[in-house]
Image 1 (spheres, rainbow, N blue to C red):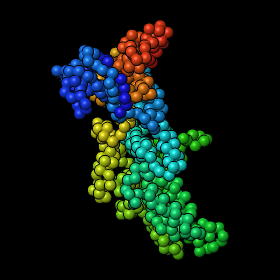
Image 2: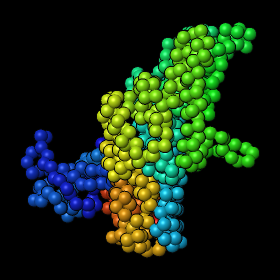
Image 3: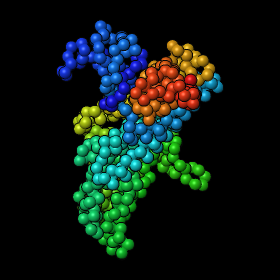
Image 4: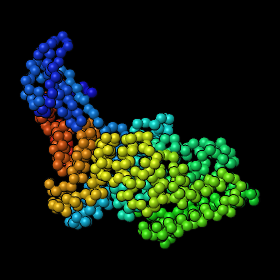
Length: 554
């Protein structure tokens, strides 16, 4: 709450509160006038004299009893700290999203062309914002490491990154149009599992951190560390192939075999077969995947279509079962822990339900990812909600009902429910950008064009806007209210508002009047004198106002 001068503007008084308790009581003590300020702001001014008869519509300029007494400003939901930095860094991506869709409409590409351009713009926008969130999380983690404490900003931005990236997996052309998102889902959990803190002590990221300490204490036999083989099965279940291969490489049999110890050869041969199968597990190619040098083709285990993937998977699964059925290969290994650990990893690869449940100790989310990868590899994103329900029924709900609700809404592919849930748990910045991404991923204004057309200049006609676009604008306006509250973020609000067809111009005009009042609009300050009469000052303020109007597209 900041001290300010009494507001002499024509903003209506929304509440009048009597004053008292001091040396002066009764009507002479004055009243407090409460008015809306700019954005998320209330302005409270003291007025001496008779209390006005009305409490809901009397402008302060209509009263002759305004004093120079103390007044206050109350502000909330301001954009500060890391969120202000995110606002600065992501607004160019927001503008590019809107410009790409507007350009498609201007060219007259029709509903199909605009829908394709809108989805492409949503994909680019999602990727750009995800990179910004990655960089912000890294910066906050570095600062946290220096102080030894995780900040609230780090917790919030980490969770925002997880939600944003998961929404991109399920809403923007899932599986590049194939619908199969298993690889992206596994990669998403690898990057965000620790931040989610889902599954408690049984979660794979938590178990891996404990294993690191155990391996250091195990000396020259790392495989004897507690949780070594359980973590291997978990890594295989989650599809973290490189990490699983690296863990197997720590086994002491490799060094012993190189030293000529014949007893180590059976274990090395068994683990070599396990690693080979882990590394050659078939997967779907992703659009952003870099192809190897040479002819530009993908590796033999990477499929570019669902039928090809299913064929690769069938042949590879036969190889897994052949190794599992080779009793002599397992019997030759003298170390039972190694033999059983390798068998457990292979059973996970084969999609054995019991082995998967044993490997996934981090709750229903880990079991769902593992099941999608090893039991139902061809399952499409639209079918993941049913799989999620099965895994929740088996493992029980997670430790956080709020996180369960958030993940459930996104996995179900319900855009409206997702925005409603996120609006309760995330900042206005996040929900505004998420809503715009979801609207664009659904085809943007193409749906509106299909029923009513567009004006041909990038703006949708009133009355024919899609429901998702209208909802997205509402969230952007809420975010702009947060930006407009503080002077150091108002210039950002003026860059968002031109993209709000319904209320953007009016809100921008209010900000401009506050930021650069026209010459003569301010009452002279009797205490210090006014410089409004100075033509140079008046010209500078007017020019600044015009520049802000141009920036806002007015």
